[in-house]
Length: 111
Length: 116
Image (cartoon, rainbow over all chains, first blue to last red; front, side, top):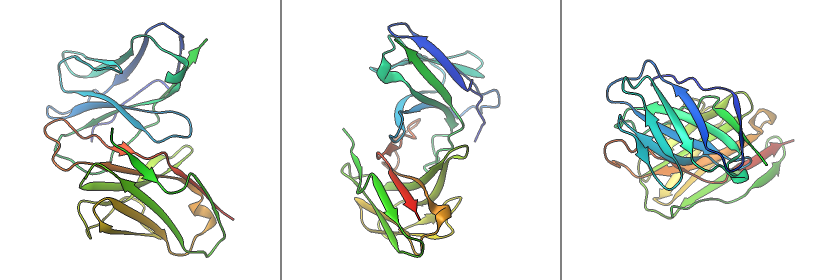
């Protein structure tokens, strides 16, 4: 599976948009980008995924660059409950086995 | 909503005890997984199962076994608990063949196990 690079931590003011970057320069053509988050003392939670088009759901938006070498997860109106570690993962669709979580980005939402 | 339930949030056991960690999912998922999470090491896959009575070793199966007698239940067994098995244990499930692009696993809340 391709590796990803994320900043170790970020701060965001409550109510503002949180933009979390991820680099995946070695991504293969059939690999999707997935985002999960882990709130303290809980299990990871799936957020969103995409291949090459921008995606949006009730939790977040995912922007993938045209060359697919990087992506940005956007939480449009961050709240204190969004404080968590966010993981960016790339994976081919046919693999039904483990997810390799890197170190992720620790997002602090500031009141 | 998918629900993955782990039987205990916190567990304290003694060295040498046999420990059972239970996980139940209510969405008829084929795939189930056991991970452990340790500071600085991230999540590591212990075992996974694609179907009833089937199991596959993950990255760190030593010291563990699993049981999947029913589709909804996946048990992790520590045959003889040791202090280096003190960790957060996470169970996950996913439906087989979710379709293109969907490698989505649903996680339980975790069991924090302390072996003394």
